[in-house]
Length: 239
Ligand code: PCA
Image 1 (cartoon, rainbow, N blue to C red):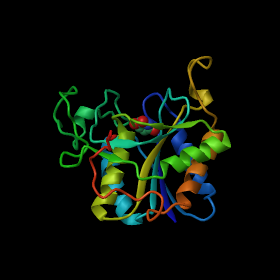
Image 2: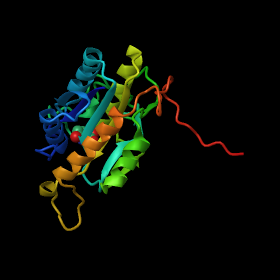
Image 3: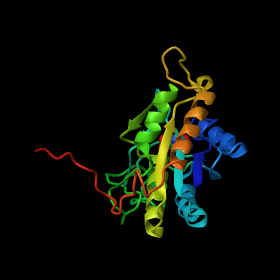
């Protein structure tokens, strides 16, 4: 199984992005049974937008796992969905804010304008994860690693990268499983250690490796087939 794991470099006040450390550690010691390719992207909207479709086309992985930092989260989280919305106030590392991202709907605006700002103006509203999310959660539970299913990857670069990766896979017609894992701050990064959540790099690493193992043991053909159509979120039927 060919797996591409993509992390991010520093952004905002986070001079060390745990996702970068995790991806670099994985690259040094690839999990058995998988052909691994790793990438660390600059936390810059234009860069993300340009890099992701090219990486998907070049590597055509069987699974794409994006990893990013979500400060304030208490545990690892598998993202359930990428939404077609980009909106943020924080300048990215190129000092380009969302309003100035040429790929977003309102390129000339100085300040965020009215919603929506699609990641992809002609794309579906959302892509659901096609990673074996339940299997990953079960593996974390069994190993005693705190982790949960998150229903929002935010509206910043992580959501954008997840959306663009899912879209690239769909457009190429590949069976690639695409998803995203957010990780908490490292203990050294929190400003209020008594009250702010964090997780050690070792535990994060163990969790990410387990996620890869679950993906490597899963194929799109069994267990978790990729959806053919994007943009719909299943609703519960009653009766
Ligand atoms: N986290 C940010 C972008 C890069 C990262 O690691 C996010 O959650 O969107």
